[in-house]
Image (cartoon, rainbow, N blue to C red; front, side, top):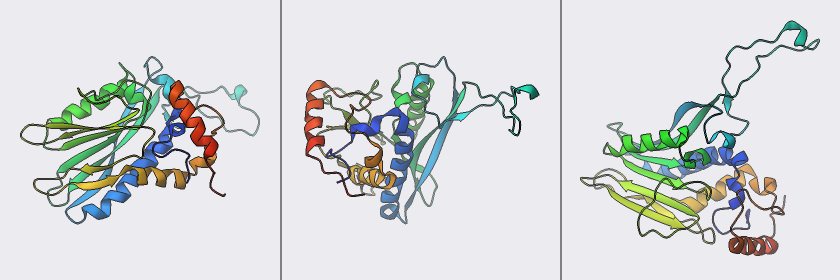
Length: 259
């Protein structure tokens, strides 16, 4: 077992590593769905691209691997060490790439379902990332496509708050297209296995299953995140006191896989 936790591993939520988790999770979901969807549908990756400045309230969550916009500030020749190559001094405006998946009808090329995996910046109120995320949701909901968002992050403000849904660490929200859109939610607890959820398709075509736990396990194994996570420290963000005590018990009883 590559993680001491039965479902989501809270140590994977650290913003410093989440961009890698995010990319690999989308790839694992795509790999799982692709053979089930053939030949009527296929899965494609797409990106939203925008520039975030230091004034944005989500700026502190950015990680070093984002692309830095070059505004052409040049170094003086005297500032360049002998034998070194002069490079442009980066500034603090960052080009952000946010990935998502779409299920496409192989005949008509219509977008049938959009699957979003939330990033920490999407959950910061008044941030550009959140505004762009919600804008895309509105655009998709104005079409005949289904919308699904998967939130595996405890920190930040939920993007979907449905009445009557229990407050849990994680949540999946689905807006099923139709004459009148139907909202659904899967509340997910840190203490349980991530669920097998249903991905809606077109017309009378039956939903297809997506095993989220299997996808996450694949990410942890492929990325060797069990070797990177320091389970002797508290996760980022920290757990609530009662949950933290439970997590420490899980970690103490866990036997790491052989390397």
